[in-house]
Image 1 (cartoon, helix red, strand yellow):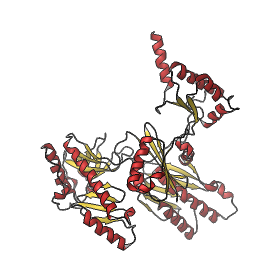
Image 2 (cartoon, rainbow, N blue to C red):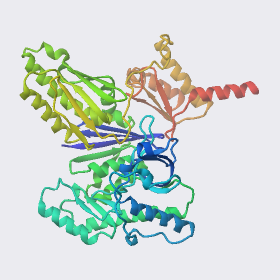
Image 3 (spheres, helix red, strand yellow):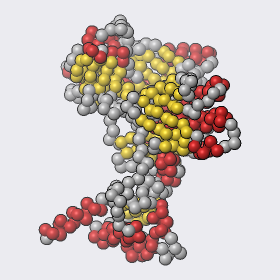
Image 4 (tube, rainbow, N blue to C red):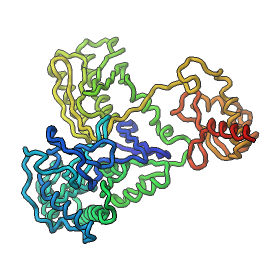
Length: 536
């Protein structure tokens, strides 16, 4: 299966689309100023004890306390608490950062113990974000710390070695286990990931040293800062994280529209697979990158309450606080000549494909209930179940699928680590804002020309880009060359600007972008100049 990664870098956010055989299967949108990424490690204070929940709230800089449950402390928490205390004391007394290799490991804590036995209010703890803030809840934390690489995951204060069960060869598993045992430092555990299969000792040793350096660099920050919380280790960016987890020989290309991010990705690919750095490509076209790769259209069709499936069938997707509900409808498929049971099976199999895609695309987590079309045959119900299992093999989130019930319901639980992706596919009229009345659309291009005139002659801005809906762009460009509105405007106002169609914009929407890539709010500029003129 050929995979492509398309990255749209804007001033305020980065959007990442994963395509499999040109079809959109994963979508991530990340604010460039965002915090609390999964994997970040903090040195923080216990804000509040909650014995009734057997948990504590920890201050990691979020408005609401981050949740740390007793079960998430990990069996090695006593050893971690001793190390944390020594780390803080050494920092206060300007002493050298302690080494984990020299820590005397303590007895593991009880699996059924109480939070009050191991934590106190105000205590300093080392914690890692395991879930980002979702809805009204703060981040969820764990004290089972880990630093992930492409081949290995490093676990401080855990002296065990785990090898991925997906490495089927017992000889290879034993080889890797012995290899890691010979190179890993004391008091560090290691998880060997599936992609480490067949790798040489030099590659694994090199990554192990890199992960150790990240850990040591994080601890060194404690000596420079005294006010908690302190971010000791920051997980790499979302796009590089996706590369780290899913990069494989099927990756055909990685397209990005920003030079700095392009260089960052090139550096990472050069580090993990130097022979494949050529698949990273800088997109410099005028069209928005998502429009060029037909992603905008797929986003518009894939999100929303109603999702079309092949042959006239469709899904209804509803979200509640407790669960997600997906209803499968046959639509025009009922007009087919086949019998009811055959029609139901065909629609349900197609729906299983689309549901698996929707779960990844929207990052739907928690409980998902799917109401398939009723089928009498147990054999057909088994086929739908197996089809769903096959489709979900591509899903990196942990999940569990139950057989269809006699009512045709399938229940799925899916790991929820990050907030669900929401994209509003409905377009509100940008002129009347839902009131029902607007200026005549035929005058819209006159309004655009007035704004171009204002930019060029009032603000003296000669170079900019005007993004408009593709239908408006077609109207502006229509006619023989040199007789279209576009060329009339260029002859009148100069050739420094360009008009670009954008599928993201509604019919009468527009955006002016300056040379630096920032959007210009002309209404605010006009009001500022009007006020200045009145004062003169």
